[in-house]
Length: 168
Image (cartoon, rainbow, N blue to C red; front, side, top):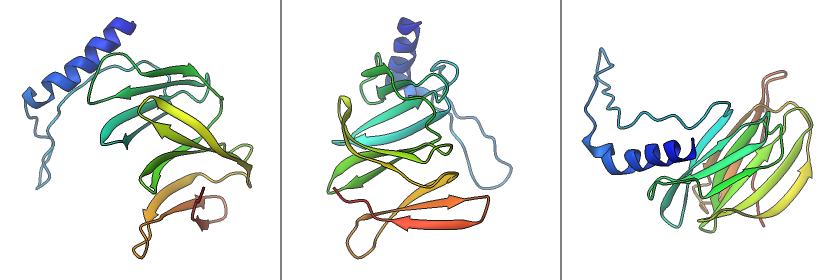
């Protein structure tokens, strides 16, 4: 299975520009499929991020804790392949002072962990907290005045929104 995944990623990187176009629109937006690969079943979160101008993909299974990080520019096998903490419901990447961080949150418990990312995957844990439960929407914007990240968290049950600026 690992060999199959590796070949799929290599295919994605090497032949993405050779893929044929498929028109799925009826109006003005056009879509061009560049790859269709199978990463494995059970992933509940997939997100892209950049570190040192390289593109990465994280795949996470909240039931098992399986976490894989792929370098999309190089292809091949995952550079990070570990079973980590189970139950994370939200993950969000942001940049602060040109460093990429991963924010993780467990909706059921309110647990929060911030990680510093590197080109080898998860570099180090830089913060751990317990916040209130049941936040289910997260996004990041950057302050126009200082380009610092502002993370927005929303809770569907009561319509609340909170904004916070991380700093380390």
